[in-house]
Length: 153
Image 1 (cartoon, rainbow, N blue to C red):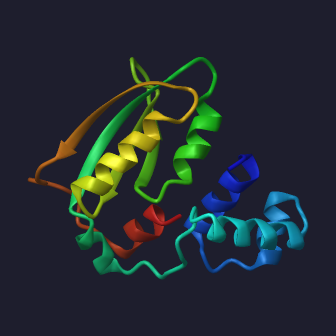
Image 2: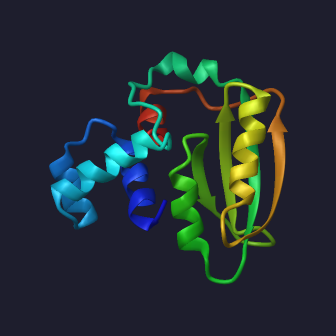
C-alpha cells in the first residue's frame, strides 16, 4: 500500500458513498486510477467491504482505548495519514508534551484490539506508544447526532 492507497482509504472511511469522480478530483488522479486502486484494495483484502455505519454500531464496539503516540522526527503528517486509514482509529488528536498524538480506538473484541495495536506499532515513524483501555464511562457528554457526524468525518 502506498500513499495514494492510504489517502483513498482515508477518503472512503469518511464517506464510503463518494463517487469515483469526486475521489479522483480530491486525489488529483484519473477516475480509472481510482477505480483500479479500489479494485486492487478489495482483491488484496485491504478493503473487506463497504457498509453503512449505524448509531447502534457504536454499541457493538465495546473495547475502547486511548493510545498516546510518540512520533519520530517530523513524521507526524505521514503517521497521521496511516492512522486515519485504520477503521479502528476513531479520532486522532495532536497534543503537546511527551506525546505527539492521542488516538481514540474502538474494536469489537480484544483480538481485534490486539491486531490494531500491532498494526499501529508497525507504522513507520512511530517511536513509541502507551495504551490505556477505557473500563467504564462515569461521566461523559450526551451523544448527539452531531457527535456521530464528527466521528465519521
